[in-house]
Image 1 (tube, helix red, strand yellow):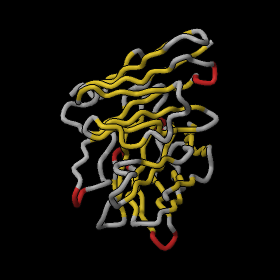
Image 2 (cartoon, chains in turn blue, red):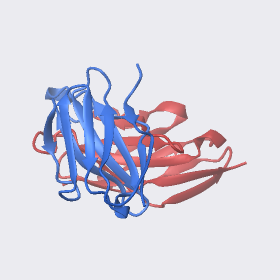
Image 3 (spheres, chains in turn green, blue):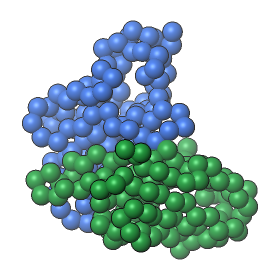
Image 4 (tube, each protein chain N blue to C red):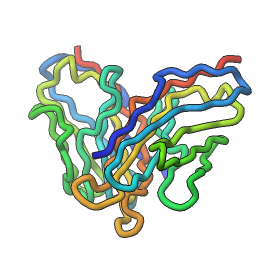
Amino acid sequence: DAGVIQSPRHEVTEMGQEVTLRCKPISGHNSLFWYRQTMMRGLELLIYFNNNVPIDDSGMPEDRFSAKMPNASFSTLKIQPSEPRDSAVYFCASSLNRGGARFGTDTQYFGPGTRLTVL
Amino acid sequence: AQSVTQLGSHVSVSEGALVLLRCNYSSSVPPYLFWYVQYPNQGLQLLLKYTTGATLVKGINGFEAEFKKSETSFHLTKPSAHMSDAAEYFCAVTAADRGSTLGRLYFGRGTQLTVWP
């Protein structure tokens, strides 16, 4: 299994530009998570999807951020326009949510992350 | 609501010494607890998790953790540190009930482990 795939691994852009981060979850997984990691704030959950439907986007910083999951094998996180304070490592993770008696026990598998630098 | 506190953002030990990383949680419902490890320039990977049953949980690379409900703790230990254990360690908790927090993990701020030769 290839694991969670993220692209690009590194992105350097200028303030005001649009940035799109991509994620391919592990095949068969039905939950997908986007996290942001910074020194100041640690690991923050931005949004997560279950069966391609956004469940909780309360962590999305503001309207400049948007996320989509058009199908079970692909998700994007878009920042438009980008700002220097958006510089961080963005992780995508996926899990198999079995629900029922096993609810909440699911292991999340993380991708290698995208290091975003906004100048 | 759930939350996690990791005591000590940095821990240093000598190779061969005991590793103890502390984690306390707050949860209004029975928790599921996790330890993840992050090596430099990599994503997080699961070390171990507690769901139900035995409160002493064994994970990969010789790590283990004990769920103590009375102390609301889930400390991570390893009897003998190895240089390869140097990494950042994250404790996390998730809710054991349904609702809008379906599948959501709440992470601590992390503890950076340094192992000296």
